[in-house]
Length: 389
Image 1 (cartoon, rainbow, N blue to C red):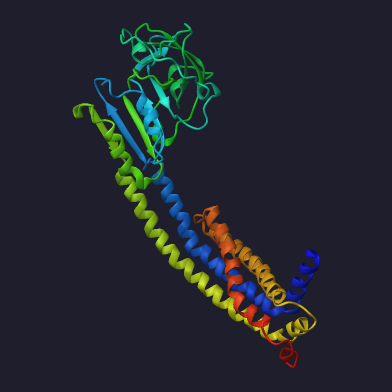
Image 2 (cartoon, rainbow, N blue to C red):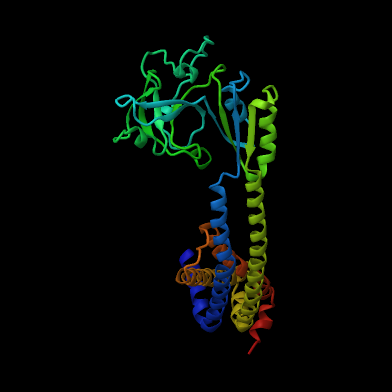
């Protein structure tokens, strides 16, 4: 069945070589035009937005001083429950460490960390069990202040961010660090790459910790789900900081970057929309003219098919299948021409989703435009059509 349908479609295309070629060239020209104009703009837009996104336009950063008890690790779990918030990361107070074998060497900041610190984490970080809440409120050493005490007596494990192990002299990427002065040791076993909005904190060691109510935070990084949600998420975060003295809190967000991102996206998208609609309209109009020409030229053939028992839907399907085939060929050819021209010019290539949308849209648009002449052909009286010379 499918083979016979395909045979009919390609036979129809071969029988109307000139008009088929004209339709392919029209759709190819429209597709190439979209790629070279709106596509180039879309590529530039994606490049600019990628640069803006690298500056974290969705991030709200909170810093506190004097370790207020209200600013603790439970905030991480609480804020994660909001749909407007994509990720939350809490950082404990900082303390310096050096390589255990070289106490006089370079110092690196070390913090406890709670919550999300990236998608590609070591398995032991992801499998970190919920620890029991500590009952002791006394802190007598940097590691205890950071919440690093381990009830098993084994040194806690840490992960290293970019360049931290180089600063400590861990040539193999692993090693033992010691708190300054003469503190406990920690095992650095893995290196990680932090998300952009956390990587700005620079080289440091992070000790992933389970949530504990009494474990203090020194900083909180909250990432909104969308740039336009930054204001609302900032208000939510501030709401949980009402009990913290205002002089001890600094809240900063990337509202200016979010506004810039929205402005860039809106202006370029509006410009692209006009170009795309114009190209699609021109291609559709051309498709209607060409397909109607084909229908008029094949009136007798369609009349014969109807007289021999073909249904109206079969006639419509045959015309649309022919146009869809030619539309896909033309759209792919136009896409190849457009991308090739941009490559020769050294211009930015449109994103893949834009390219797919152009190919599918051009082919679908030509089919939709062909519905009118195809329906007209199907509803003509077959006896009348057979009298056409």
